Length: 122
View 1 (cartoon, rainbow, N blue to C red):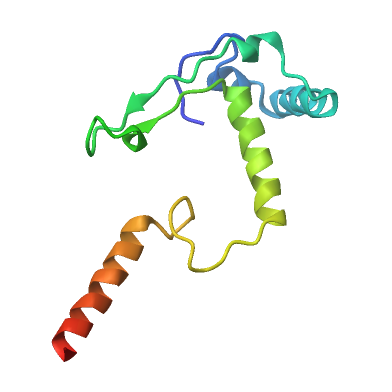
View 2: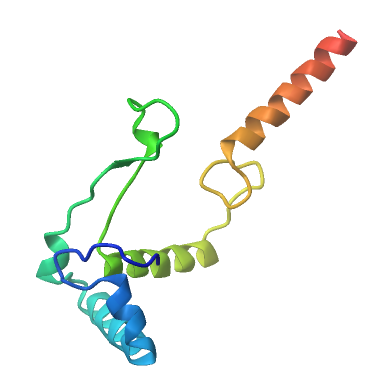
């Protein structure tokens, strides 16, 4: 996580977690473990807001050009869940978008190349 980011409703900032080093990691693991086992989020997390922030590129009217802002602890939990999903879900190699190293611009470029070769050979 980046330094000097604002704390959310819980009052924890990434800087606070980093300063605690190993004990901070242990605290976060305990909190996330409790959330996972009890299947209930802390009240502070429920008050969190997802704030859309414009990425400064593309059409500002396109919601895909925005990113969200969450509680730091929720980001960690999200990364854990994402990691577990990647281990259990098989994604076809033809899938583009939201894949590391396989953006939709790669697929568009490939499609354009195929189209140009086809037009050359008529």
